[in-house]
Length: 91
Image (cartoon, rainbow, N blue to C red; front, side, top):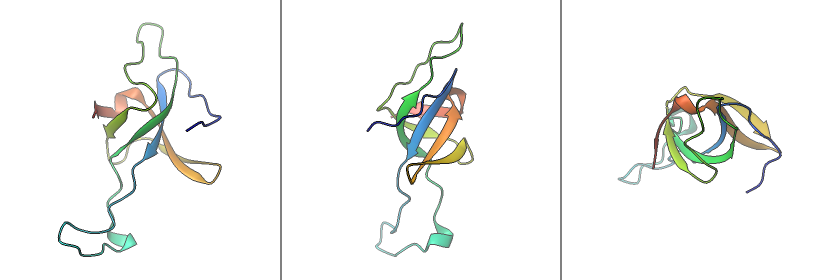
């Protein structure tokens, strides 16, 4: 996927995974009760800081904090832009 956004410094652009719509037992979760996704795929990466190169790359699936990043819309699609330090792990 190609997005015309280039994060700067240590920021990354993440496409959040879809929120779960059903439970393991098959119950449908209403929109008001859905948890914010905490995993997603990196679609763009900044160049890093002078003494701190980036450790993630486009295409990585990552885990991040529930309230991490800033929500932005690009071409009608929702993304999060956050600092690399907001990412907990690469899956």
